[in-house]
Image (cartoon, one colour):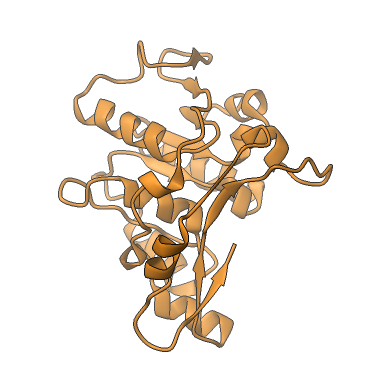
Length: 214
């Protein structure tokens, strides 16, 4: 399941914003993306390209930008390692580094108030509308909202796995510095985890789903 997008989408106020998560790995969602697009009503388009081939993410960004040139395109995940290379792509307006929930929410508020990107925190990239947002201090995940699994087609993932297995995220970061892993560079060997009591509540899900934790 796209847990990173779930985390960012769940951080937004559901009373004010409608979040749509499209997972290209699911055939029905690929059709949804093709048929609906953004219909000119989206506030922005966000991608998590570290969970998909970069070529696919670039193709989506370029297609969105060519059809809706004024629609901001935001990348997160991949830019945490390669911000300069990410912002060399003209179709990307904002690169969010590190933990994305608070930064993404602040970006949405700025766009809602029509403040734009000018004067926003962080380093400007080439062009007035583009910005690289440096990582904030790692926030305690217990202070963040629980993931809203209503934002994704849970049953579709169950069918894809051929089992009722719910994916959960109980921690962020890592204390170790394994050479093959991106975490030491992204989170600077910091670590935060869910309180066991909240983990128990978060693992409660309807049906006979079993939790697979990461």
